[in-house]
Length: 160
Image 1 (cartoon, rainbow, N blue to C red):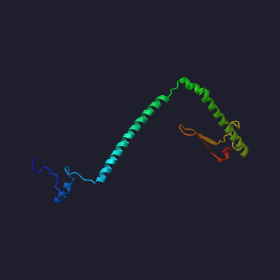
Image 2 (image 1 turned 30 degrees about the horizontal axis):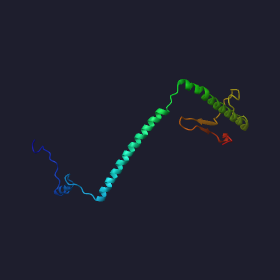
Image 3 (image 1 turned 135 degrees about the horizontal axis):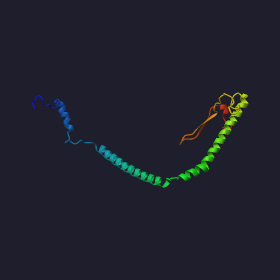
Image 4 (image 1 turned 180 degrees about the vertical axis):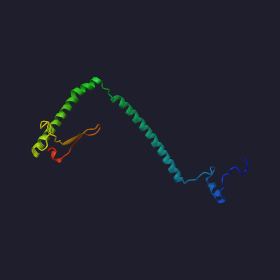
């Protein structure tokens, strides 16, 4: 290697080289006694809180594992079908009947108030082309409350 191709690190001016001496690895940095004690106390506090957090998390995960294995019940296909027949089907039929009755009441109320202006196809024998606007909408989503929204304030039930 020739002297021209060798690369040397750039040399700093003399005053900058003197300022770098205080940060050398052989010289230890001195701190006030209060700063040192507070730093140690903070480090101890952080270590203790970390240990406590790990203990709490371990206990939580153990508790969750034991609860999930104890409380989880696997239903058989026969049990699910029996529940659907005995309970769910009856509830659904009641709900459908109530909805049908409400729609009929609203249709009768509309016919009385408007003089028969809006008629459904069932009421007019199926020959009418008039459309019936919905009175209410039912929103149902898993994990949320069921919501019944009334489209027109005139059709709001008296109970509300």
